[in-house]
Length: 249
Image (cartoon, rainbow, N blue to C red):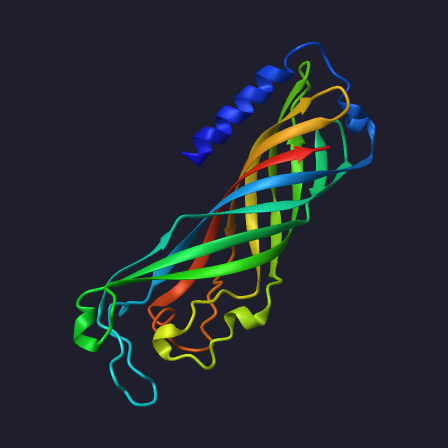
């Protein structure tokens, strides 16, 4: 649904800009120019389970069973938002290099469903783990542009992104919690690959670019330094983002 809305917004701006040819503030003539961006982010965990992922979790010290066996384990789609800046370097008429430092605020969700939790004194049949993050992200991409047609130019984008969690470590400090109340945690730093498409729409004094981008983490981002019922069933975990952005340059 969010992707459909984003496509409708892109179409609306295309129609709005398709009048007499505008100058666009002359940004395409500059070797380096700057701007800012607003983003809407949809995220989803992609999980690779262990072969014995259904097995009940036991206290590592007492061997006491703390959970029932799992019946299901999956990532849930969640949303977030981001704000940032654009640094665009012109390589040629059809190729730019673009750095977009961004602050992203999101809650990533995992769902755990148990068979008969009442047998082991668990008050819930399902539990949701929310990983709240404030990320500083540094996407670096190559922007490949078509020829300009009046006030419209399409482009594709390919690149890499470095993400760093800047939220306080106190938020994820569960050292004094019982095993059932510990947190699922990501690594605080990871890389992602990205690909997307968008369009440059030229107005009299600026250029606006609606864009849709897909990104996926590289390798395993699960922090399993401390065993608990939520990371033990998981072998590897990645994070997928679909981002709708508006760039103003």
